[in-house]
Image 1 (tube, rainbow, N blue to C red):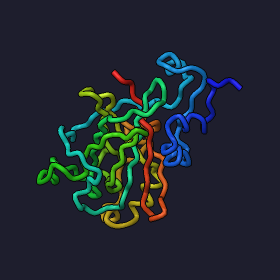
Image 2 (image 1 turned 30 degrees about the vertical axis):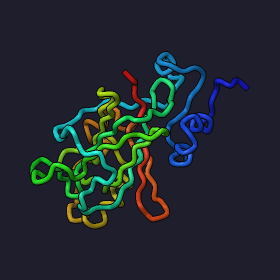
Image 3 (image 1 turned 30 degrees about the horizontal axis):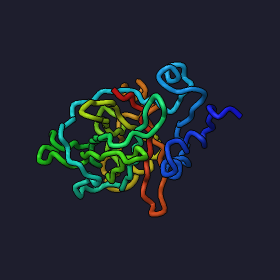
Image 4 (image 1 turned 180 degrees about the vertical axis):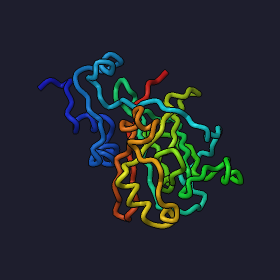
Length: 230
């Protein structure tokens, strides 16, 4: 067998045992074929990448706090977000990248803006990736606001450079289930689903999390973000 060819299982092992254990069962798109490097990415031989750039949006606040729990005690269905950052050319984990996320609370409000102007911190935070490329956040399932499907904003920084700006999305079926319960149920009739969102339609399917529940009943959302190191 040609050692340069990797199965799905083999490519997960390349990302480290922890990564394989944490997200392998979620069916993430992490596969490699012959070769590596930018040419392999361009040809499609390496397919663990394809993390589309998307708009930063109007709600970014720079210099967020380095912290794992970003809820500030606000209500909502608990969500554990596992964001893995890998090199787009090799599929290898990137250690020490700063993953910066922000999103609306259960009521569809962003901190620092509008109804959320009294705080600049809830649902915002930064984590550094581990040796396995993992940044882990404890938050709540995002609420919806008019004109957008449910999403989390993300930036990946390394060595002072922004390597990726994008958005992370959720399966509509899971969102429907979450929104049938408090506190989300007090705001029925969300107006935009994934397929109707103009930003989602521009690559959002490739930025949708794999989501399940852990043994404690907490939603765990996992995504691998391939980035090009500058």
